[in-house]
Amino acid sequence: MPKPLRINNQIRVLELQVIDQEGKQLGTLKTAEALALAKEQDLDLVEVGPNVQPPIAKIMDYGKYMYRKERQEKKSGAHKKTEQDRKTLRVGFKTGIHDVEVRVRQADEFLKEGDIVKVELTLRGREKALAEMGRKKLENFLTLLHEPFTVQEPIKRSPFGWIVTIKK
Image 1 (cartoon, rainbow, N blue to C red):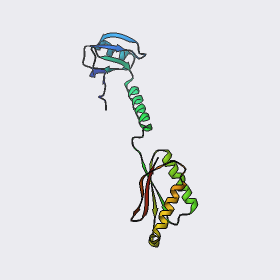
Image 2: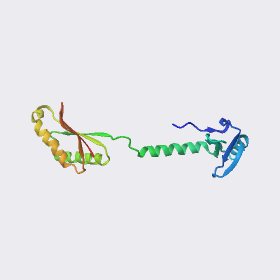
Image 3: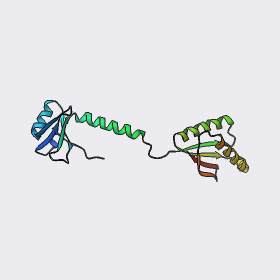
Image 4: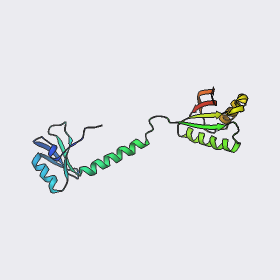
């Protein structure tokens, strides 16, 4: 996080290079004069360039400036996807074809967004004796996907059925 800017009476240098609200250079002024100019316009004197000689200060509404800056950071941060999300879809052994198609559409949507999709086929009770049929159902699920994908983790057995992890 950047250091907070010094404003008004927090500025401790004798002279400043001052820029007005419209962006016009006012030249090098004493800090007291610059503060008086800012107060005259009901604005703040903000030190925007502390590392140069003389430091650069701008006459502006500090509250409005900070509000806009926060909004801009939030906006730019919202569009960045830092890492892939992992989505899990569960399909039962006896799940009907229409419900499987709904899950396929969801998986396609997740893949389109660039997410990693973990598909679980659950086996309950006596269905565990038909594990190979469950594996075939999971393979069939993968053939129904419209979006291109790669298998990140191959189909493997888990305590409650079969799992496969895919990504775009």
